[in-house]
Length: 402
Image (cartoon, rainbow, N blue to C red; front, side, top):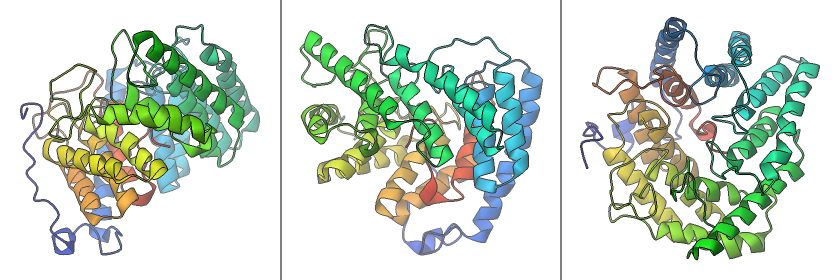
């Protein structure tokens, strides 16, 4: 169980005295720690730029390609208010359109991601017509997404929820309902209908069941937790009685899969308590649990989320690296989600300690990802996290948290 993660070398939070170099009693980061964050963001950004240039041609996706670098620079523009970052975002998103398209309909691994990022970048540059053109291309995908006869799955990376996130992203970045709510509601309806159909077909104990490549995944990226997280969002227009009848018992079904450690399996029937990644395990499940606690007000969900956070603190410094999907930066976002919910300084402390681990990027003997500078596997994702940490109460796991 220990072979996938390094032993956590940090002492846990023991009151404000243990965190005095990081933040004060109000949760405001110290000037010293902010300077350390900014310094490492700059250093890693330079390394990333050099690495991307040497690597040459990449794919166009948010997950591992040029659109992911564009999203990073858009984020840096939003956190640092520097126009030069917006220009870099435009440069990278333009590169993504020089690649062959028709990858699918989703934000992370399909066409919807580059289209959504381009729409936002042009909007922020006040180039209205170009922004509208990309929004129209994005909405052109809608009918194929909501069609139940399509082979499209429902999960985040390659399925309906991945397209839904692209629409939500545009609205969040525009600061208004640029994409009509009806589009989002129709996607949720298709996801609910698909889940009911498979549940009935498989005689599942969960009212909503989903599969991806004939596996019943549990986690955030491909599985039930990621889908249920979106179905519990109050702004998505799902009737409350539907949430209580279908979504809540489905969430409870997932809760019953918990290992004694507090971690969760990657798939139904998998007994190996090995993976502590955002994509598989506690770091992704925690968002479903937090949202269930917010919606249903039951302590059991908070207790499970708290257990997830303990698992991540013990086993979250992964030998796979420092990235978002399966690395220290992605795992640190779980602490920030708990901090936003509880305002317990313990979770901010833990996120800061995982950030300090990332300050020593490449010095721990982690394996090198296939795409070492990308947003979800590599350095770009770590930079995204460090920049997000500058404003802890505003953090959101990219391409997922709403």
